[in-house]
Each structure stands twice: as structure tokens, then as C-alpha cells.
Image (tube, rainbow over all chains, first blue to last red; front, side, top):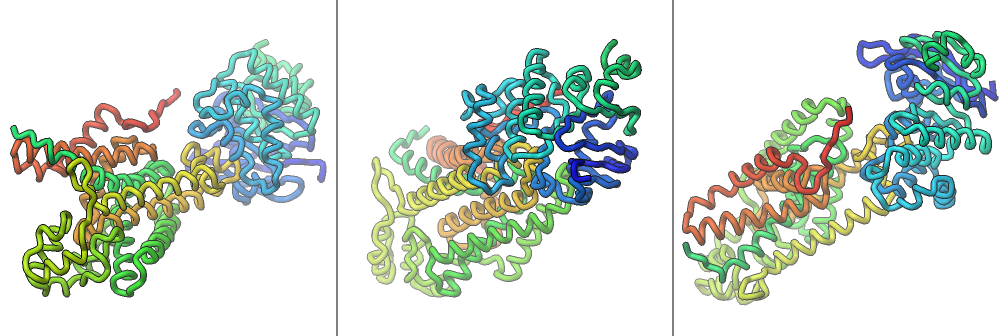
Amino acid sequence: MTDMMLKAEDLHARYGAVEVLRGLDFEVPDGNVVVILGANGAGKTTTLRALCNMCTTTGTVTMEGDDISRAKTADIVRRGVAHVPQGRGTFPELSVMDNLKIGAYTRKDNEVGADVDRWFEIFPRLEERRDQLAGSLSGGEQQMLAVARALMCRPRLLLLDEPSLGLAPLIIEDLFERFAQLNKETGLTMLLVEQNANLALDMADYGYVIESGEIALHGPADQLKNDPAVQEAYLGA
Amino acid sequence: MNWNWEILPDFIFNGLRDGAVYAAAALALVLIFKATTLINFATGELAMLGAFFVYVLNVEQGLWLWLSIAIAVLISAAIGAAVERTLVRPFDPADHLPVVLITLGLFLIINAVAGDVWNYQVRRVNDPFGHFPSWVPNGSELKTSSEGTIACLENADGDLAEVAAGTAGAEMCEMVGRTFFEVIGARLHYRTIGIWIALALALIALALILGKTKAGLAFRAVSSNTESARLVGVNTGRTLGFGWALASVFGTLSAALVAPALGGVNPNMMLTILIYALAGAALGGLDSLGGAVIGGLVVGLIKSVLVSWFGVVVLGQAYFSILQLAMAFLLILIVLLFRPAGLFGTRRIERV
């Protein structure tokens, strides 16, 4: 139980009258990278939003054994969950520096400056543009900023919603290399939602495939990669 | 055509004085619009309430004027936050109609309640910038004074000694003394300078709050991207309440600054000012704080220079003076038609 970072049981979510998630069960072990695959509209984004209580949900979500299904979004963030929403999720009217500072909003220690320097070292492009408005950055730079911003709260669980969306292939590869590196070096647990199944499964330990709000398939990443159904639907084989 | 250039600087100064008041009121509108993308139609009435607090504390209770203004500003901030908490937050922020209707309702309620409590008579207030020193009798007492006194005070925009008629007036005017500097042949009143300084100090304070404090950063983050702000742990509700409080501060400031120039406070004092402020905010771009300031000043200039000086003085058409408010509506219309984002606003680009 204690080595389970996150566990969802019978997770339902709805927007108004539309039920988007129809009872998901999944778990994210501590230190692992777990990927959720699925077509457009399958409920991938909603799954991440449901975990942070950003939509109406029923079911149980536990983080390290504690029930967080009724917790406020801000309190879930304080527990160490960082969420990079789809479409970058930066603050376009704020400078790069302010974006990073707001990422550390929940922190009360005085090492925020040191962390900014650290992410600047890892993403040097951001340091070059520290005083520019985030909205003026390129797509790839904005995605890096969104990730750096999320990491500023020193999360133990990083939720990534389609980080590859709208980015050039070379930039996507670079980004995923950095994710893998982060996971290896810091043991950061990640729950990743992706349409780019190949890259995602390469990095992940375990995967779930969602179809119409239900889990259709799950298994270790290598196994999913070789699954004929997954290959046909998501790997373009 | 009577190009009376000599008096143009007077009109420019007056325009920039009124413009500073519109700028403060426009900031109150923009602070709320930035955070919630809705127009708070009760902005003017909340500000009027703040001006009445100054009146009650200073004139009725005899508190020091600046202390009264400070207390009134704090009470208004609390009321702004309370309005957000009780009347705005329970509603879905994506659905604007209910909240706009609520602010309209609030507008009517505050106006009616203020009318009931204080009635609609103008109540004289003290000018923080020495125009009407505190020893000048207030309200009813003044009415019983001799004709000279009234002439003196009514014309108090100028050198009081010049317009004094009657002994009481002359005496009083001598005590009041001049109320302006002479700059390039025009009268630059202490009150005008005082309003400018007050606005400048308030703007510096606002810039420091938004730029240097954590609450200010959170407010800018919520204005920029509410969902991401929640995801970094910002309590968006509390932050919006903070925005409403800041907006109320600027509203009350605008009403307290303009009240002496209007002859005093009354429940309808902010009606037209809100229209000019709205024009200023629309011109500057509804989500730009700097734009609100410049927009407010430009509206003041247009009203004074274009309408009053050019229309009334140069063209000699007295009816221009009744077109001031129409000009504000025309300006709003033109901006919305040709440049909906205003001069400095963010152009929303929808990526599909």
C-alpha cells in the first residue's frame, strides 16, 4: 500500500449530464512512469482532471493511502501533485520568471531561487527568455516552461496531459528524453496521457488503454507494445 | 470659428483632472474584468458608498479627513470582497449573464438604500486638497450664509478674491486664498495636482502589490489562466475576492477624489462617471491596467478639449455641452466596432 503513489477505484466523472468516465480502476506505483493511451474523446484528459478534482467525480482516489477524492484542488497540489494541462498550461501574460515563481506558490521554504536556477540549467532556453512573456515563446519552449513550472512545486507525482501535442517530432523526442531522465535521476512518479503511444510506451513502466471511459486493456509497457490490438490502434503498425 | 487658444490649457488641465478620476474608476472596472471577464455594473455605486463613508466619518463624526479616507477605503475593500464571496462566487464563472444581472441588481439596491439613508440632496464634503478647508461650514449652514459667501464658494475654482461679492464673501475668500498656480497663463488648481498625485501614488502601490507580492502574482496568474492557477495550488476564489477588494479601493478613491468637485456626495454622483470610466476602460482595452489609466485620461481630454473647448468655445455651439455623455457612448461604440481589444488589450486568438 505504501509504495503505491496513486490509486483510483471505480472512478466516474461527468460534465453536466454527460458521463465521461465510467468506472476506472488503475494504480501508479511510486517511482514508476504510467501511461494512459486512448483515442480522442476516450476520457484521457478527464481522467487527469478527475484526479485533481477539477470535475464532478465519484469513486475513490487515494494518494499514498490517504483518500483525496473529496480534497480541494489546491490541497491536492499541496500534497505534491503537479498537473501540466493539455495545451501547455502556462500563464501567457506572465514572464517566464513569474511563471516559475507561481509554480512554487504552495511552497514556504526559501530554496525557490535555487530551484529556478536548477531548471534554468536543465532548460537553458528558458533562462535566455526569463523576462519575456510566456505567450511569446515557441510551442516547444512553452511546453518546457509548463513542465518546469509544474516541477517548481517539488511534486512527487507529475501528471502530464499530452505533452507532445502540437510539437515537432525532434522537440517531442528531446522532451521525452528529459522526462525519462527526470524519472531516473529523481525517482519522480509520472502519470502520462498520450496519443503518441510509441514514445510513451518506450518510457513507461506500465500502461492503460481507455476506450469510451472504460479501461479496455492494461499491462506492462513492453507487453502492450507487442499487443496486436494496441499496435493496430495506436502504433500504426 | 473663434480659436480661443489662450484658454485651451485650462481645458487641458481640467480634462486631465477629470480623466484621472475616470482612470481610477476605469481601473476598478478593469481589475474585475481581468480576473472574471465580466463588467461589474455596481462599480460606481460601491464607489459612491465609499465616498459616503468618507462623508460620515469626516463631516458627521469629525475624524481627520485622510484618516476617514483610509478607513473608508478599507471598509470598501472588505465590502468588495464580501460581494464577491456571497453574490458572485456561488455562480458558474463561465456563465456571465447571472453575474452581470447580479451586479445590475446590486447597482439598483445600493443606489436605493443610499437614497433612503442619505436622500438625494448633495451633501458638501471637505476637499482633501485644501479647496474647501475644514473650517468652511458644511451643508445647510452654508446655505444660510450671505449671497457673497455662496458666490465665493460657487466660483471657488478661481481666485476667490476676484469673485467675492459681499463682505462675508470677501472675508472668507481672503482666508481661503488662491487655489491654483498659474502655468502658461492657465490655472492649475491645487485640487487637480492633488488628484494627480493621489492617482500616481495609488498606481505605484498597485504596481508594487501586483508585481512584488505573492497575492499579486496569484491575481495575475488567475487573470491569465484560471485553470492553471488552480493547478499550481492557488485558491482562485480567495484571489478573486482580493481582486474585488482592490477594485473597490480604486472605486472609492475615484469617488472620494471627485466628490468635492461635484459639490459633495449624493447617491447619483457616480452614474455619469461610470459611463466615462467604461469608455476609458474600453478604449484602453478592458483587460489592460495601463490601458485603463491612459483610456481614462484620454476620455477626460476628449470631453474637455474636443467637446467643451472645440465644440462650445471654438464652434460657439452651446449644445455641445450636452453631448459629452453621448460622446462617451460613441467612443465605446467605435472602439467595440473597429478595435474590440482596445488600444492595449489582449487580442484573444482562438486556436481551433
